[in-house]
Length: 375
Image (tube, rainbow, N blue to C red; front, side):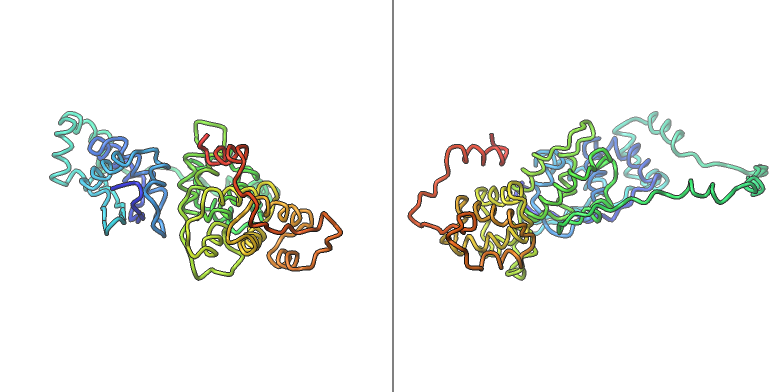
């Protein structure tokens, strides 16, 4: 197994309180705490739809590929996980742990547990967490609450029980933050990090770099650390810019698509360079252009610059689009296709000189390295 191999997760497990108790107290000593934490994280993360690089999973788990493979083997041995392989693709299937009564009846598991811990520990543990109650001969004399206690309840009291409706986040993005947050627990993304600006930046990065809900979920442990009050947007941007993007030929010609994916469609699936990723980020962050407008500009730039993206050519046009409040693909196409009055300097659309020096300056190179987290 190597980091560039692909993986997909299938979860056939649901951790009820009884299964969780069995997992922690009985399986924990057998597979080890680290493997146990990995199992719990991936089960909570849920099934994935598409194959992704194992490197991205390792980054989220903060594990080396050797450690990850070792933990997979431990989980396989105790049937908590099944590993399927085809060439360089893996499917990791996660299963339920046995509940305590079933675990104790399993001849192999219970004997292995005693060997790895001790008979005394097994006896003490089962007496604490697994006791069959015997109510023979006892009469239920419990009293129940009488409804007469609520006879003085009034309509105005009912208002205190009405939950305050949470207003959905309204961002003009393809990445729907409300859908994303629906199944995200506060353990994975604490409430203190769910500010409007953090979520808006998350949605913008997803639109720029083709980040799915499942992929963004794997980034959260790195950017929203529970031991910190800082939401690391720089780390999120770095991971989004370096995420592998799949090519969808069927979406060719549609401007309403993530910018990275749209650019790949213009280049017949060719991988987008770091230099071009930086340009995409600047068009959004510096000139505040919507993804559809950026896609129009990318197409226009490639068409007029020998199928290359040139910063000095694109940025003045981006400034013009921003200054004229161009917010959708239709208006951007109209703006770029209209005849410009060359007497008005501010309305000129630059022309590309193929003989011009296209190397980036030292300052621009330093900015690129900083953006990519390499300096």
